[in-house]
Length: 52
Image: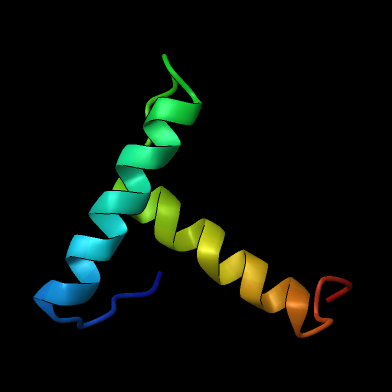
């Protein structure tokens, strides 16, 4: 598990991304944690660590 301290600005941005993802995927139950996890995975892959 990972717990991250953040400020309100980042939470607001994650909420905006969550709303966008929910519009793009109607009927799919998504959470702010799902959005954050997807962002982290994208960053890991960009760093070339997707083989690990």
